[in-house]
Image 1 (cartoon, rainbow, N blue to C red):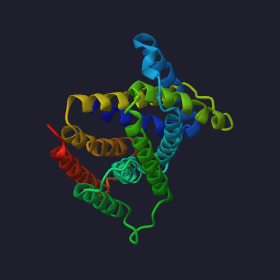
Image 2 (tube, helix red, strand yellow):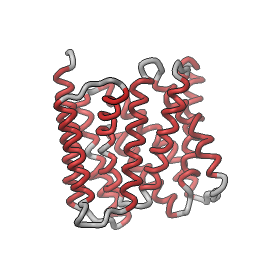
Image 3 (cartoon, rainbow, N blue to C red):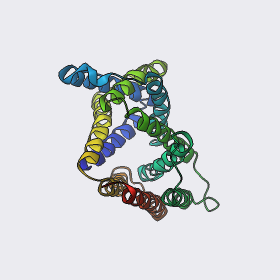
Length: 276
């Protein structure tokens, strides 16, 4: 999980620096997907091509359309809002997963899930402070990102019933490469010097974050792993404070804690019902 936290942090810093250099979001997405595709193909060549085989091609494509929407709005949101606020709003992803799983996967509504949803939306209101402040348009961009990622995770829950995790990564890179590259050609800015390093970091950290998180869930229960995810917020807040002189807003931490608390309560409830 420390690998996951550091991966997301380094990726966010690299994206912020690339935005400062006027590298477009589509260009970042295209290069990230191409870097990831090369790495995944090398792994498949070494350990077997069967690992990237899929039995649900249409779902793979659909998942990556919404995942591309999530990635593009998240990257764009990093240029609009303080880093800590982006990461705090991102904690709402599990709420969207809960709601979508009930609607499309037939999962039932439980007490824990209702509490998670209620605390989640209450936490968002605390972060946004509607009526006390004008809500920044960037907030809606990041909330759209959380919704798209929620859709993507819901699709992934069904995909992993038949496909290997490497297949999910392979089709993510394969499908999203042209989705990013084609529009990027119209806004292309040739990277200079250290900007190439930032682009490489975005590509590598995107894969390492997923890889480390997947292995964290293999080695420990969700009740141990999920609380560590909350450390993303203070970590990125410290980065934003020292690198970009971003203020530390108590409402962001309180709202994020409420969202996290609801999600964690639901996880504890789910773990209690699971067979040992």
